Length: 360
Figure 1 (cartoon, rainbow, N blue to C red):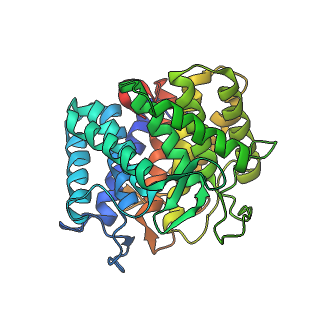
Figure 2: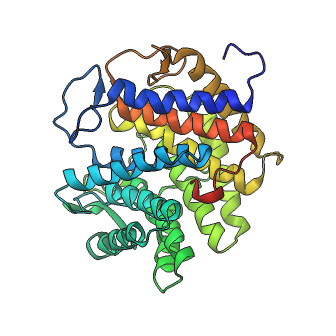
């Protein structure tokens, strides 16, 4: 930022720039809604799970500003996703569906409508019916065509959704399966230092994919632990979340910023997941806790860089490495991560709990 001492209002304005940058750089006529890249390239891929996160970030803006226009955009994105998916909630990937369900649960809280919550429940039940199995331990598979492959990307959001649905309706099943899936991740994919691996048995050999060291998995485990603690308080869960967050920042952002992960398609969204759930952890432990200091330093250092390097055409366009300006082509998944980071920064500087009023 140019300001030596940026204000809370400045960071809210910067979050707005990133939100509006999504439309400015990627906006497309219906039914496309958003071009996959800037400049416009191949739009043939329907990125179901990216659109689920678009719903989420529009809800972030709505809760930050109170502007009903952002809520309308969230609902329009929901309609777009559903329409492009043939009117169905479901696809073949359990992680994709669970991200959509998480966005729908938040949409239900924001609107007070029961329909999105009913849809989130329907997705949870679909995932259990088609994806829950005992291979390598009771947990959720990654996709319908590969039921023996288990990973954090499927089980992490399943835990978070299970905890949220339990909070709405403590019927049997939600909490029990959510805790079982969390314990499976802990036992199977989390190291002694708290670092979370991606998955196991992808090639049918029982091997853990230790080569994929992604922020996405760290954020999901943190979010899952905090979500369970929110419905059944357990200090061990909080301690696990802190350990994973601390290790993730040491291993993946040693200089205070996460660099490029993978090819910038799906991977462009990964660090946004980390920011979203670091926010829930900050709410749980409080900003004055000693454990919060490295998290707050990371949020501030990285978003300071993003705010400097991302300015373009009076908007904000993020690259995959915030140390330097974006180098097109840029995927809108990458822009979504930047929005999540800046929404968190705005909340931190305003002293607002990001979990207040359904904001996470």
